[in-house]
Image (cartoon, rainbow, N blue to C red):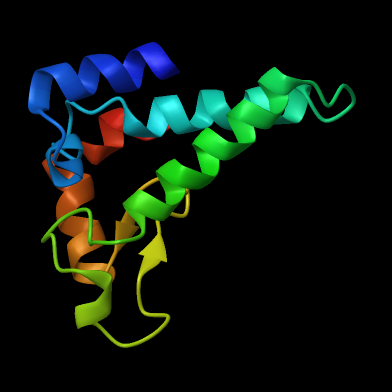
Length: 112
């Protein structure tokens, strides 16, 4: 998962909004892999499991800062209006219209 995120960063830069290019992003897959690694580490709380939890928390915090389609910042929309994709829970949207548009633009091929 870390390799996918690093490849994404090298391809599109550090700007987190650059990660959300429909049909070409590894973000949902990377987050899915991090979630799996956290689940696997629940029974053996070692430093790697803890690291995965921290990485996952940081990724989700970054992704919740803007709409994955239009890029509007979370602080520019009413509290609690930013909702995650119901399938992958990795990309956040300011509304149903943005989610539908992003899905049609290619998120359906990225969604895990």
